[in-house]
Structures are given as structure tokens and as C-alpha cells.
Image (tube, rainbow, N blue to C red; front, side, top):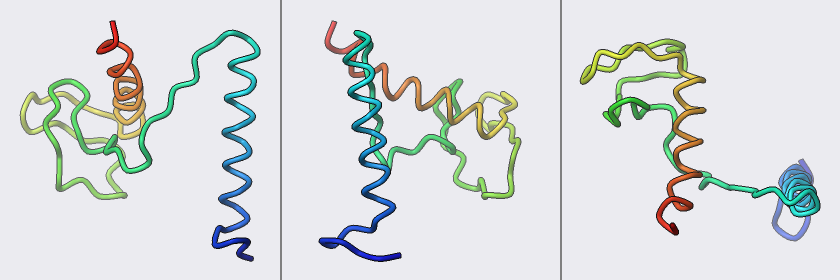
Length: 93
């Protein structure tokens, strides 16, 4: 991938996509929330918060060792992403 000013072209395209989303949200009076790139979302249990360090990329479903809740990897991550975005908003209230 070609580099421009130390950034990959694909990174620039993603940045432009994020800018477009922010613009559209502002235009339609919606809140655009971001979560940190390195925020762990897959391994923590969305029910109790216990971190499953033994989880691999091949594990699509897993059971929390702490609370015995059964998780789908993608749904669990989506719930954790939602919580990660909403926590700062709740703290501001």
C-alpha cells in the first residue's frame, strides 16, 4: 500500500469515512460516539466484566468462567462497545 505523509492510503480513506459520519450525525442532530482503538471489547464478559484471557480468534462462542453466561463473540463485543461509548455520557450527567 502506498504511503502518503507517513500514513497509508487506506488509513486516510477510513479517516474520511469517520469525518463523513460525524458530519451526517451533526446535520441530523444525532450524537456520534467513538470508542478507543485499543479498547478491549471481545474478551471481557458483558455480563460480569470478567476477562477471558484464553479466548482465541477461532472461538466464536464461549462461556464465562466467572458467571457461567454463554456468549457469542460478536454480540458480546457489540454490547461492550455500546457500554464503552455510553459510560462517558453517563458520567457527564
